[in-house]
Amino acid sequence: MTIENNHVVAVNYKLHTIEANGEKVFVEETTAENPLTYLHGVGMMIPKFENEMNGLSAGDKKSFTIAPEEGYGEKDPNAVAQLPLDMFSESGLPPVGAMLPLTDDQGNQFRAVVVEVTDNAVVADLNHPMAGKTLEFNVEVINTRPATEEELEHGHAHGIDGTETH
Image (cartoon, rainbow, N blue to C red; front, side, top):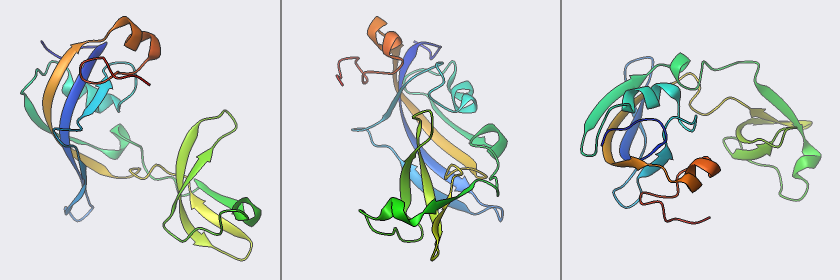
């Protein structure tokens, strides 16, 4: 069975970024016990990632690169927020490099990285951590199957075999 829209896909991958000087930097990898499982074709993944996965079958291996403009976009130097110090009165001031879980006005959750702590504010970079990065994926398809009605209604996969609950 080949990967197509509304299929649940389980894939093992290894992700590297490719720096401007050509150096590869390891980011993460999945394991056979904990593969990436997603609902294909519903916008859960980067569109270019899904395009590369289309038509593959269980056991297929593939390597591909995703340029910043096809991935998380270029880094926006203006995507910086000055967070008031009183936001951190209970938790304490975060160190530079800390990831902050934030929520926007519409309830969307995202993360920001602390780039500076001043006497007046915590300065956070709102860019996605992979913004501006070229991504290199090495993937192996573990399984693909049609999504269940419940998975389609929920808009996400319920595990490799469709039996995981939430």
